[in-house]
Structure formats: structure tokens, C-alpha cells
Amino acid sequence: MKVYLIGAGPGDPGLLTIKGRDVLSEADVIVYDYLANSEFLSYAKPGAEIIYVGKKGGDHTLSQEGINKLIVDKAKEGKTVARLKGGDPYMFGRGGEEAEELLDAGVAFEEVPGITSAIAGPAYAGIPLTHRDYASSVAFITGHENPDKPGSSHNWDALAKGTSTLVFFMGMKNLPHISKQLIAHGMDPDTPAALVHWGTTTRHRSMASTIKNLPVDGPAQGFTSPSLIVVGGVVNLRERLNWYEQLPLLGKGVVVTRAREQASGMAAQLRKLGANVIQFPTIQINPMADYADVHAAIRALSTYEWLIFTSVNGVKHFWLQMAALGLDSRAIGRAKVAAIGPATADILREKGIEPDFIPEKYVAEGVVKGLLERGMKGCKVLLPRAKEAREVLPEELRKAGAVVDILPVYETVPAGEAKETVLEMLENGSLHCVTFGSSSTVENFFALVSPDLIRQHKDIVKLACIGPVTAKTLESYGFTPDIQPEDYTIPALVDELKVRL
Image 1: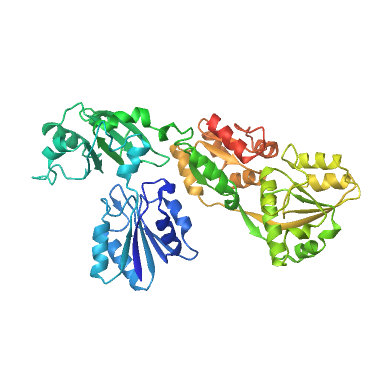
Image 2: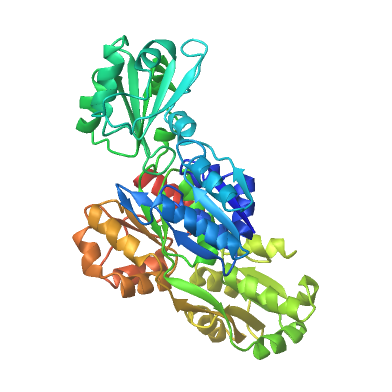
């Protein structure tokens, strides 16, 4: 039994340490906080017990004593426990208290440091805490101190005069008191000061003022908790070094409706641009219940002139079944291979197959046009695809005299996780775009979210389609796409979002 106190970092999921990720993937139990990014839970192994113990705005899901007891009890059950805390556990995270509790209970522990928001938040806002021209020392201070108590645990005189840069945690409610104390103890009222709200996350924003004016300017610009207070000359560098707030999609809420197996690449591209990505897979990719027909077709590959793949999933599931039969790309033999678009072509190349044909337009109609130009009369064609799919391609090829065998290698079923998140974001105005990568995502999205609800928010929410087929399906629900790339690819769609949102 062992407990790992893991620093989850300040919010940007890329700032979790490699050791933290590895421990999460091995833990039997994960206990996490409000300020720990929930994306980290994707690292959990299947069957891991996941327990939320967050504290938000004074609303405690579980008291600190309750948390201590929980992690001790879970460890004593012989389990490996990952205690995931925002920032660094030992930086105003009560990690030291939890560690002592574990030792007193005879439970082994390790502390896995995390990047504290005190460093990362200002860094993303363009404020280095030290700089040769401005600061050679830093103080980290809790701003949560009760201003009405008789004495103060802070040496305000030393803070006001003796440290180059001050960083206050949890100080928004006491900002007027902090400002007053620093000035009263000798700090120049015009000393630069800044607020960093939700630092490093997609909700990140910052502002700069002076220590005298910050208590008025901050609330006037809508700054609330959680916000760091940074005081010192280094704040002057914010305007020049503020790189994160220049990202084109920072703070934009974007729904990705693709199946989770396909969504990660698009989600990663959008996050790099600062978007708040909500993965809302409206479809789920499932294997077929019976692969007897697929195995028979694979064994007969030598009888086909063309093998046509219309999706990345078609390639993946077809190759899984080839592997199940002990075969690899050599089994394709003399058959020519077509890919509907660049993503499908790329995964074929990973399998050692260079496609013989990729259409100029990445839709079934484009495949039909190109193949007919190559002459399909009398050709035997194998089409590995989803169980339910558009019939344009096989129908047109058959009209041209081809013999087409449709081979379902996977099926799609409706999914709906994150529905409540999407509805909440619609309501509070933080959702800016819904992206559709196929007709089925449109149909399944509107099966879960009322078209009338989207119409109510069309002044804020834009709808983006990957191509004309998807757009046509969207139009059947009474919507015209706001965004549609000329090239029907995910990178092209992301580029359009970058410009149009």
C-alpha cells in the first residue's frame, strides 16, 4: 500500500509531470481536487476508482479531515492511491498535513512535485518573477488571512520593503486589505501590480495596474477568484512578454463531436490555439459482433482488383482482423488501394501501403469520379467500411459495371457523454462553436441537443462542417454552416476556425 501526493500543475494539462502521469496510470484509486484538470483522469487504468473531493467557493465536498481519512482507509485496503492536487501539494496545498497524517497512520507515501500556479500563471501572462533589471527575490504569500484578527502572521514591513516580487495566493477577497497594508508599511502606491485569473487554462486572462488601484481596477474588469496577485517591477514586462493571451482561440469554447477514437488529433490542434475543447462524441466506434465474413473476405483478397477505404476507422479495423488471421500488408497482393482522403492515406502508409488513388475532393463522389476515369467495368471491388454508411460509392460503381462487396468492419452507435457540460456552456454563453466531421455526428448531436436550443444561441454559437455532405445534413435541420473549409480535412477545418471564431 502506498499513497502518492501528486501535483497536477496549474491547469494546462501539458504541465503535468511525466512521473505524475505514470503514477496515475498505475493507481488503484485516484482522489482529485477542484483545481486539478479532469483531463488527467484519462490516464487512469481501466477499473480504477475515481473520487472527487474538490472545494469550490467554500462548498466542500469533503472536509480536510474527511480527505485524510479517505486516503488512509483506501491505502490500508492494500491499494495504491494517487492523491491529485492542483499546483504543487506543498505550496499552500495542505500536502504536508496529508503527508503527516499518512505517516501517523503507518502508510507509506511519496510526494510528486507539480508546477505551482505562482510561477506558471504569471509566466503565461508574460510576467517573469525574477529579472536582472527588476527582481532578485520572490515571496509566496497566502492572501487568505483574516483581516479582522488582532494580529497578522505576515511581516508586512518586510514584504513591503524587503522583497522584489510578491505573489499572493487566494487573495481576491482580501485585495483591498493587502493593498492597504503594503502601502501603509512603505510600498510606493504606484508599484506595478497584476492579477492572473485561472492561469495557464483556457479561461486564463490577466490585467496590470498599480498596488493602489488594483482593488478597484480588478473587480471593475470582472476579475474574481481564483486569481493570483503579483506585485513588483516585473509586472512592467507583461505587455511585452504576454504570449499566451495572443493565442487566436484562447477562451473559445469548441465542441468536437467526432468519435473519441478520432477526436484526439483535432482536440490537440485546437488546444494549441488556446481553445477550451469539449469532447462530445455523438458517435461511438464499436467492433462487429461477428467477423466471420471479414475473415472470409481477407482470405479471398487475391480475387479483388480494388480495395477502397473511406475512413481511418475502416483501415484500423480491417488491419486488426488481418492481424487476427496472422496476416499483414503483404496479404493485399496485387490489389490496388484507394483512400478517400489524406488522413486515410496516412494511416495506410503507416501500414506499409502507398495508395494508388486519392481523390481531389475528399468525399464519396470524388472517389467515384476518379475511379470511373480509371475504368471499373468488370472489376471486383472490396469496400471495408462502417455497418451503416452512405450508398453513393457502391451504387455508382455498380452502375459502371463493377462488382462491389460491401464489408462492414465496425459499427457506429450514438453516444452522449458531456451533454450536461454542453448545455451548461450554452446557457452561460461560453460555447462558441460546434464542429461536425460527418453526417452521423450532425444527426446524433441533434438527437441529444434540441435544434431549437441552438437557434436560441445562434448569435454566439457558430456551426462548422468538414465538407458539403455534412453541410447538407446540417441544412436538413434548418442550419447553414457558418464555417466550412475548401479542403475537406481536419487541418483545414482547424485553420478556418482559427480565422473565423
